[in-house]
Length: 172
Image 1 (cartoon, helix red, strand yellow):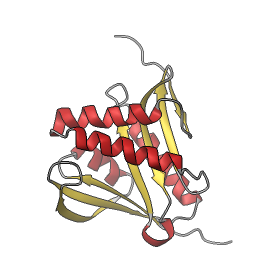
Image 2 (cartoon, rainbow, N blue to C red):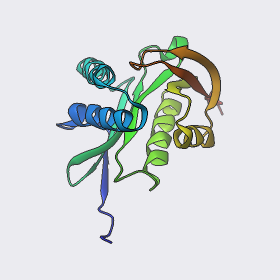
Image 3 (cartoon, rainbow, N blue to C red):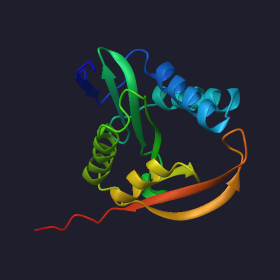
Image 4 (spheres, helix red, strand yellow):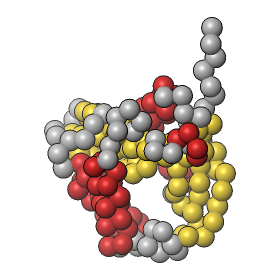
């Protein structure tokens, strides 16, 4: 077995990130959940729009790469952080990174970013059945706060919203 290659995590866009993050979502969710064109196109379109309007003062993108090839990513969208919390989005890892602690590292970076911005909460939408992801979310402090049927993924699923409440920093 070949040794693991070093992973580089960059807090910014790198060329190819939009296409590769969309590809990772498209292939994983097609293979495991039967999602199709609708979902992959939605990821690519929304991620492109987000990055076009990217504001590093309130948003964050981390890209994990091996030898320059994007193998994962995570986003914090702070657009409505004051009203409804920061939105954790487009969290994905390739098979090359799953089960090696990179997911925890990325989610911890996202939480630390939100804490540093004094955001009061973080939320994410996922769906029932992603048990490994749910375990990771709950292990770092997210709680399931809402469930509903929805077809925003291209097929009907039991959508789940997880929230992480951040404590305000104390002065002194």
